[in-house]
Image (cartoon, rainbow, N blue to C red; front, side, top):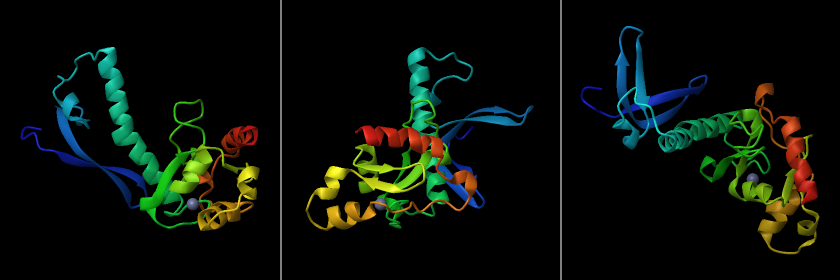
Length: 193
Ligand SMILES: [Zn+2]
C-alpha cells in the first residue's frame, strides 16, 4: 500500500483452481482486525476510504466490480465445471467458448452461479440467445423448426441441424448441473419464439 504497487488477487474457484484479478490496489489497512481493503479500479483508488459515494459513483463501482470480479469468476467456474467444452457440440477450445446465462443477468433468478450457467461456443451461444436453439429441462437440444428445413452449407448442417435431439454434455458434479427450473423458464421462451 505504501509503495502503491499493483498486486494480483487470486480468487479460489475450486480445488487448485484460481481466477487472477489484476491489477488490484491496496487502499486500506487495519492491522487491529487484520483486514485490508482492495480496489479493482484506478479511478476508485483516489476515493478516500470511508468517503460516502454518490449514487453515480456507487453505480460505477458496482458495474466495475461486476465486470472485473463477478463476471470473470462466473466464467472461470462454468469453464471448470464443463471441463472447457461446449455443452452442445463438445468443442474443446475455451477461447471460442462463453459462459452463458440460462436466466439473463439482472432478471429474477439470473444469478452468476454455475447452475444458472452453460458453457457454449460462440455460435451455440448466439443461437441460444436468438431462440434458434432451445434446451429442454431434460437437457436435450432443440433446433428451431424453420432452421431444420433450410438447406445450406456445413455450418448449418453439422453445426446446427445435427445438434437437434442431442443430449447436453453436463458437469459431473450434481451441484454444477443446469437447474431444470431455470432451463424450463428459458425453454418456454424458445417455444414461444
Ligand atoms: Zn457448440
